[in-house]
Length: 335
Ligand SMILES: Cc1ncc(COP(=O)(O)O)c(C=O)c1O
Image (cartoon, rainbow, N blue to C red; front, side):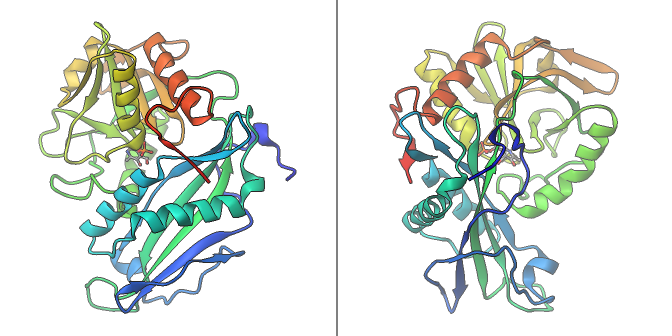
């Protein structure tokens, strides 16, 4: 495969195939590989009007030993099902999901970036309601598609911190709403805050708890994590944030490194007390945050690069993903 592996970025590009399953009459069909991205859909399909759509984001890596391994696919399977349950969509069996992911990775193996390029094969499972309907009700039929896109090293020239803006005008999720699941609509709702943050020069928006606007929730597409001045791993606990698989894994890595881990409500004013702050998620693992703006208040952290504690977490985590560190928790699954 003749791709410019060093400059892939994080953008859609077609690959050989995607796998699809259709749900009708109470059961999922066998999976079938498609060599097209097109789909025929009724304009009355549920997803277009009533938004039954949930998705996932996960990655496969070319390891040091040349094998391709997927990072914690069982976690994505379970989260997909948790999202589906909340929107009254059908669940997809975890083992079948893992097999489907393996199938699509194997069929697209030539698109898995080489070891050492810093890239990976990003996998995007998406499930949506396809029945034609006019009244509001759950779809009777659904499609589950898993596609694969090669993506590049996010940091080509070393890890660059970003600045964030606290979203004060709009919330991304309602209290007791859908913030804890990966519903497509959450992202539509967050676009306006991301746009406002970008207009103020900040690549990311930081959302606060929608009920009281007192605590830190999460960034637009990643969880919030901080290192306290006494070296603790601190991350927000909230009913309206997505349970990040990266965060869950980093908490384990931090514990493995002997760090204390605190998952708790984090007051906005506490931002003044942290030594390091980062956003964490599948796309980048860890993005250090150098400044957080909240009206006239500015919170500042380690400016030049990633902070020393975050760097340790980042190296261990990416080391596991690329097969450079021992995978003591058996997170990596051979494709
Ligand atoms: C809102 C939101 N929070 C957090 C995350 C990070 O989750 P994960 O680590 O599972 O990618 C994502 C990305 O999937 C997200 O969209």
